[in-house]
Structure formats: C-alpha cells, structure tokens
Image (cartoon, rainbow, N blue to C red):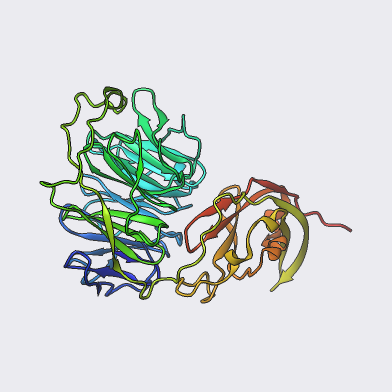
Amino acid sequence: MAHHGVGVVRSTDNGNNWLDASRGMTDPNVWSLALNSNGELFAGNSQGVVLHSGDNGGNWQQVGESDSNHPIFDLAINRSGDLFVAAGNAGVFRIYKGSVKHWMRTRIQLANSDVRALGINHNGDIFAGTFGEGVFRSTDNGESWTAVNDGLTSLRIAAFAFNPRGVAFAGTPDGVFRYHYRNSTWIRADSGLTNSDVTVLINYDMGHFFAGTGSGVFRSTDYGRSWSELNTGLSNVAVYSLVLGFDGQIYAGTTSALFRSTIPDAAQPEHAEARPTDESIRQTREDAAPPTSKTPRLSISKILEQAKLPEAAPLAPGNLPNPVVEYKSYQSRKINGQEIVKYNLSVSNCGQYPNFLFEPVPGLPPCGNIPNASRIMVEIFDWNRNRLNLLCNITTTKELERIWFEIDRSLARTEQKVRIVLTDRWSHKAWESAWVKVPKYQVID
C-alpha cells in the first residue's frame, strides 16, 4: 500500500498488520503502485521518479533518470511487461521491459496534457485520462494517440476499469461512462450512483464493478447499468482507492483509514443477484449472458487506523465553482541585472471558497519547501502548460485576490494566456479556471 508521507507499507496477513517497505526511497510521498506478472513492484513518487523492487518491497531502486518533477499519478503495465507512466503535465512515458536506464516518451502530443489516469485492456489498447482534455486512446503501444471524447460530459478523468471483454469504463467527476468501440463514443453508465464524483473504479468479476466516491463505495452487477450503495461499516466515506486482493476481498482507502471487505462463504450467499438483461449485455458487446452469479453482501471493517496518516478534515463542498481569474497589473524589476516582469492576478469569486480549505492539515506532506503548508495549493500555468508559479502559503480565501507570477522580460514581449488550478492536497480534488489573457510588457518612456 502507498500513502503520501509514509512511503510503502506491506501486509502479509490480509491487512491485519503492516510493516514498512520503503527501504531505498528518498521521497516518502508515493502516489502510485503497480505489480507486474513476475511479482515485481513499481512505485511513482511526488518528484516524478519511478522506483522498482524485485523483492516484494524489501529494497527499491530508481528506474532511469527522471526528466520531470511532476508527480507520478498512475502506473499501468501491459502483457509484454512494458510500464506506462502518467506524469501529469509531463504526459505519458514508457519504460520497456527489462530496461532500467532510460525513459521513452510515447508521443509528444501528450507531453503537454495533464495525464492523471492510465488503463490497458487485454487487447493492449491504452487509455490515458487527463485533467481537462478527456481521454486519449492508443492501439499501437503508445506510438500514436487519438482523442476519444464523444459523449463525455466531463473531461476530467479519474480512473479506468475494464470488463473481461476489454470494454473500457471511465470514472469522472460527472459519473461513470462506458466506451462503445464501434461508434467511438462514451455512454453514461451510472444509474443509481447518488454521488457522481467518481475517484476510482475496479472490475470485480463478470459484469461486476466497484466505484469509490466522496460518498462511499457503490457496486454494479450489470456492467454499469445500475449501481447500489455499499457502505455498511465504512465510517469514513471519502474513498480514494480500491484494490481487489488475491483473497477476493476489497480494500478501500479513505482519507483517514484503510478498510477491508468481509466476504462470507460464497457457497452460502445472503442473496443472489439477478441475471443482467439482454439490453445490458448487448450494450457492452458481450455475445452471451454471463451465468447467474451469487454475490455476497459486502460488509466492511476497518483494518488500518489513522497512524501516520493525515488527520481527518472537513470535505470540500461538492458545489464549489471553478475560480474566475482576472488580470490586474504588472511591474518590472531587476534581479542580478536580469529584468523580470511580475504579473498580478485576482480570483474574483474567491469568497465562494470556505476558509478551512486553506488551513494546514497535520500529516500532509510539504508543499514546495513549506513543511506546514496550506491544504490548497495554487498553481499558475501558461498556454504550453509550463508551471509559472506554485503558491503553498495562502492561508485565507482573501489572499486569492493577490496571486502572481514572474517571467523574464524577453518572454513578456507578447501577449500571454494563463490559468490557475486550485488543488485540495487532502482530497486531490481540483478546480481549474478558464484561460485569461495578460498583456505584453511595454516600456513607457
């Protein structure tokens, strides 16, 4: 299991006890984990570094040289053993099987896309989910990519899952969508999902999926056609990770604890689920109905208390707007003989954000060089997705009226387009502004 600020911990008894498994890691802020068919582990951290362990987490070594300081949001491995890395604004990287010396970009067109999620089906099709640009699909091991966004109502992709036929499902802040290969479109598949902000998806069995949301765990037994809530025993419903264990149990990671499902003997289930309808089977391109399955009720017990984890904090309201940014002014100054232009911006709707989102949360990792940083970090990006500034010390919403970035005067000779992203480091929710124009710098004689 990976956790920010903790590194990697390992359990050999189905989660009852945990031991540190971070030897060799210099950054304990691990964002992603992946396991290949040989039992080798890969981990991605907050500094853009991928690490490898061949001894079940006993020791870790860096894989190649990182050319990006962007966090590693996700890792995915295909049947050939190639490792694909989602590195935020740095795009997607590929590490060939057996190679630990260098990284290879899959394609330059994704280098400026903020990639947060990856998924690979049994045919080898790769799906890359971005924060704001939707889904890209590759059918040639990442050599080329095609945007596939028809039907999506949100272009912020949090997670992918696949049914046994390789049909893709995407989790977004606006629900779950199923990919229709023949028409290259996405179809909504979230009836009954009372919280549409999906953070994680996993496939459990033929037609059975689990979704994690800010309101707990939901299950579908008919290929995503309908969903029902399963939160018995889940004292914290802010679910951000789900894993299917080798024992068939579901592990749910929340903002304060880890929980494990307790699955009764399958031979004596509490009830049997109905067979999916012909329509749901046809919609998922299954050529025959799966056999009637008996699915036990899911109850959940806490197995990992809050030790070393960030403290519980209030959830961000679900209806917060995206920031509205306005350009205010600029001025120039010289630093060591170099002329720098400072641009001042303001978030005009800052009053709609609660102040508690800008308070530090004990246990969160440092932001930049600030150990007890604000819960919300503010990033300012240019049109090419280069980060112009990172603000980690904003403590009240009023301070959003005075945000800024600096660039060299030579870069300020033309009009710029910038936008800001507010990220809740505790829940990983983010709010992104529209692009705003800032004028070119002009010398006034």
